[in-house]
Length: 359
Picture 1 (tube, rainbow, N blue to C red):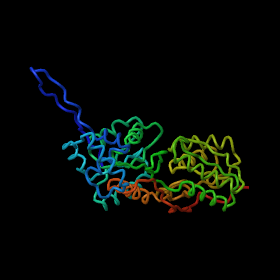
Picture 2: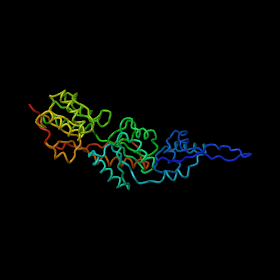
Picture 3: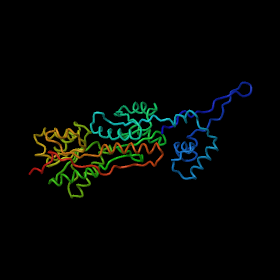
Picture 4: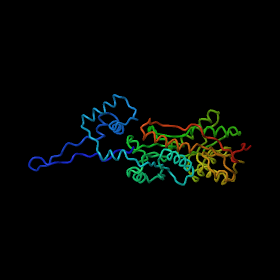
């Protein structure tokens, strides 16, 4: 539910011989919340007799007592704004050109429609943070945010964390530590499955092209990869980081293969990176999979049309989008808030880019 706005202060009136005297400032919702030790959202829902709110009776009584003590009176305009809904959500993605987000968007769109909402899509690229926030949040255009674009020191993320009782929101795919509003997939288990697949084909010298390690998804994929290698008694140190792009994958693969030419298989942590890895292998005069086997995180239809067709790890992206919408609706309707994970749902899609290791 959008945070109430327009909580005003008292006007001035004339007193005595035409002298103006300021009236005491009217108690605000935030004043009641601070004195009672709860959030503004909880105060608002108690004062509006929200029957879906699960709260201890003593907390409810304390809030009502504080409101009476402070003489709090709801601002009529703010209340009207707070109960009105646009029946719209916004999905913020980091790159509109990334085809992987099409599956997430499709799942979110269909589930939002089931709940009676429309879904707006916005690109939240680096450098556009204020524009994305102003356009969708402060303008009151949406009832909630699905944020798939979180990154370190993101101003929007900081604003949402600072006002947890404000606009309903969830972070999907890219977790935000301490938010308690993450919706993600089992990336570690999925990456372990990649190692198992390559190990089953006979590979013992396996490397990984990772994403930027300041991003939670990149760390999770690397953790799952390294963890399973250690369990198998294999070297887990062969990895190189690059941006989540073709160029990033190509550069990281060049660096990795320069340092570790003995590697017989590579795992790319995004589909675009895998395309870059294929170029790096060709640049060396090698072939996939004759010299190096390759598998990519995420599956796209174009994988079948690459040369060779690319083996991939298909993730439950549509299910992720739907689960994020469900979590957002639960927030708006006053149900329990908490992080969620889509368990399972991933699988290896075998094509021609993985073979037995070279001699």
